[in-house]
Length: 358
Image (cartoon, one colour):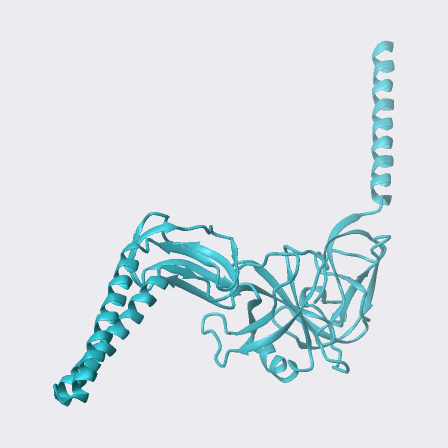
């Protein structure tokens, strides 16, 4: 009986210790700071800040080259991607038959000229009629034209680049029989780069009004950290019915040191003209209402993760996912754009996925 009492007391004591330990652990958990990962953006301006438009590089000049005459290829020294200069030979067909035809045409010219000289002398002696002399003259002119045509055909056995550029595609192989006008290769100009972007319809009016005063630069993944001056070349007059955006074409000289080719992705950035009004914008998801219904945002200190609730005065929607903030924010501050309803004063957060340029 005594042993049972002792064992029971021990069990009770252990239970008390477990309960106390559990309470202590709960107190520690309650006092531990809550760290929540949140997405953060840097406050930017809708007008005065740069705005980026993704685009695609297209060939400024692209032609399919073909021979004016047909025959078997005997020289095809260029490959896809090769650079050629204006006038450089890119392909040649066997000139043998065309050289024979030229020799025959030259012989015919010599015969026709001799006939014309003979008929001219006879005409002076009234031995032939004027009609016969005219016929000899016409035969000589026809022979000369045929000689010129044969010489041109012989020259056309060489296919030369009409401008300096890069071989985009080859359609045939060497030693293949090709026909006149059959595409042989595609040549693209490399002196100019053309970038096509789509601008939303709610921005195109401002774009058109300020394109002369604005500064535009192009960025390429092939040249990280570099910007190249670009200029608007053409603005579509009608929106794409599927995307409700306007196609805008920019041009710029071929950048030195990188090989920009059609099909590459690019980004065109607009820097506004001096004095353009500033509208501070944030993603609409950054705005939340407090107990009174007033709009607020969470300001995040990137260094410490501390958050501060800030009252703001909002304006119109700037586009589909941003809202204008009239009061309460300054450019460069960081605001939370995720989990805003679960953040509390005094909480420490971990900023992630920084987004800029809004």
